[in-house]
Image 1 (cartoon, rainbow, N blue to C red):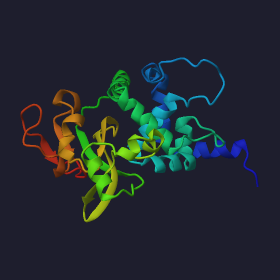
Image 2 (cartoon, helix red, strand yellow):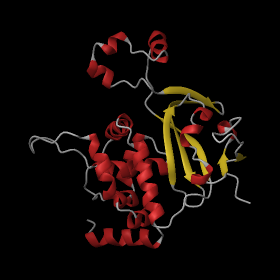
Image 3 (spheres, rainbow, N blue to C red):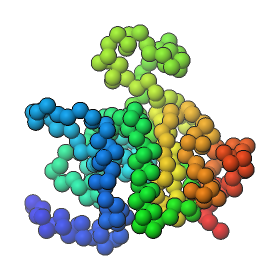
Image 4 (cartoon, rainbow, N blue to C red):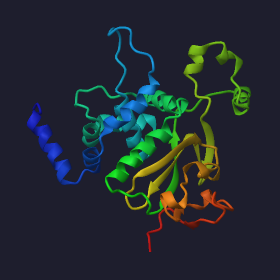
Length: 268
């Protein structure tokens, strides 16, 4: 039996009745305000309408927000957007619409890093929330999640070259081959399990559960080395910090020891 438009509307209505948080986020945020910032990724104008049109940059930015909210790898993000109606509605995608694949997500994230736009985008988001009366000062929850990527089957010599932050000669001579190889991912071991890929380090406001800062690192980078990049000062993010012991440093940037609590400890 073929589904009708009314069937889809009924399913959306049930999501709304259940309190879809993504629908509420869409209702209070004007995502078009991010387009001027994102436009700097493509500074040159298209000479003609021929060829494949670029994917909407605002849609890609919203995909990264979904990825960080749910701690998804690029491959799992592609799958979840294709599978979940709440994700499709948040992005404005139709059931028959094309979902950006994992490589497109990776390329977009790298473009943001190259143009140093990540901080500007989150600052703009925080300003918009502040204008709505949403304060992000209840205290940050800082945590890291492994993001797995396809394992690179390299020899010992190649791995040694990559660890030295160099490019293997064979890859350097072939740009097309180099583009298919991930030289930034790394191995890490935690809880007796090995992980290959990256880490997403995020700062989430305790009460609103909104992400206020995010940094991606190789999996082997210790959490404490990223703390300074995601931790706000007390006047911006609040005095208490919820984080596991891996983020503990002798002194914070303000010269005082933060009040550390385990990440999942309930507020007393």
